[in-house]
Length: 229
Image (tube, rainbow, N blue to C red; front, side, top):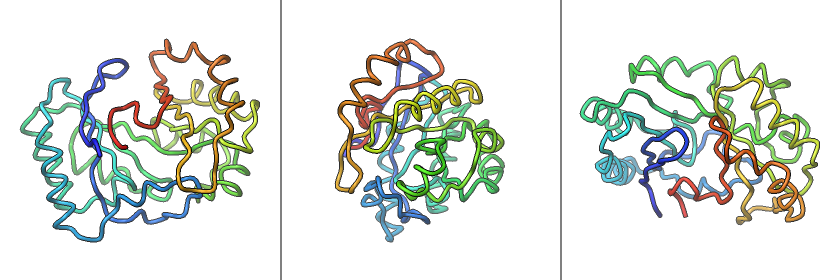
């Protein structure tokens, strides 16, 4: 498992994949990342301390992800992150949170005392597909509702059951309402949700220009940020 990397193209930053407590929701049908969770704080602390020791502060920007939300990180790990922020003169932080924590984001801003870009895994703005098929438990109706709380949506493309029109709308909403977005091309895993190879081929041809868009990061593989396995 790779847990540290440097992203040097769009939005240069260091990125760390930490361990956390189990996801509070944990029932998304497409997600098996929760297998990286742990109930043992000492194990979490040991892993996260080692991972964070690699942060240099080279870009002044740090992204912290885990297999749940930032709110599932133990207080001891949050303290480690804050210590690194001060020691390495980090000026900006990227964090990710589930929709259920939307009213608590200010807690993280007050704790870390630096600007935070908050990501959210919306997967799609199509409410029926997101809730009925993906079981996301994020029952917002419009992108404007998401933009009220979050800075950057993470969108999934290439899942069976998605349509070209859904993807076109998702990317249009990301461009219109947000200053940053991540497009994840779906990778098969242990869940029942599977890739649609024809849809992915269409997406690669239709939206190849996104690679040149300075505000949208496209992950053609789920490890393109250099962390995970």
